[in-house]
Image 1 (spheres, rainbow, N blue to C red):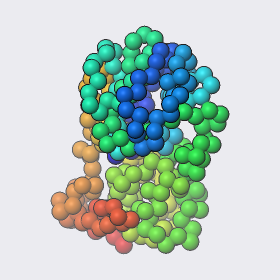
Image 2: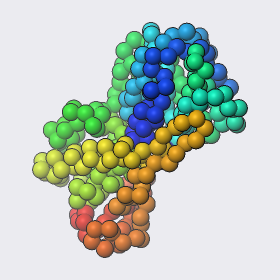
Image 3: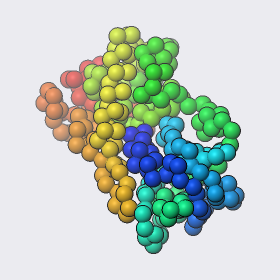
Image 4: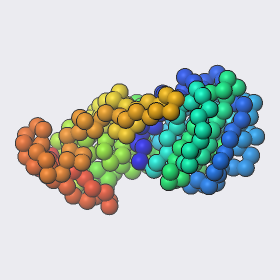
Length: 272
């Protein structure tokens, strides 16, 4: 599933081709996504100038005059900028066509994504209103994380993956952040002292910034018909490395299940 770094990489890749342009039409070939594409979405977007391409958590907002298209990539969605009208393939469900002929093409084999229409304050939309702070923002700091952890006995990895506490720290980035902070993923959140939370906040920010710089773990950039792969997984210390040796100490990487998700860790670098 595309996580925050992949979605941010996508946002940066498409923004330059969209901002300042006017929408000519929206071609919806299959409206049956996670939630049906609104019947009037094409009418709402047509003729409006794109003011911004923003991101909140894993949602993208194509902001136009008077509203915004709220886009979620789901489990398998992707967006590409096409400078020529390449024929749509089976899973290419939506094209946002600009007046200059450039297209933003949405591909989603599993159709768990979404294209919705938002007016007014987008932050108040039901999908966004209860989300925690952005991890790279000043709002996410050790004081915030300490309040989130207070009295909580759930594993710290489960807590930092909760979008109500902080958005965008998916399984890959939670595992890598905890390794760099030398924290066992099963440690109860309430047991972490303030100085450890300072270190964890710093590593979360570091890991996500690095992942964005490397194009994420599954996506990198979209130009024309080619989607390039991200490179963050080449730097992985623990995620997906069960049974391999730790790149720092040589210990065997182990795996546990936390909240129904596999979690890899190094028992020497991340002692309980």
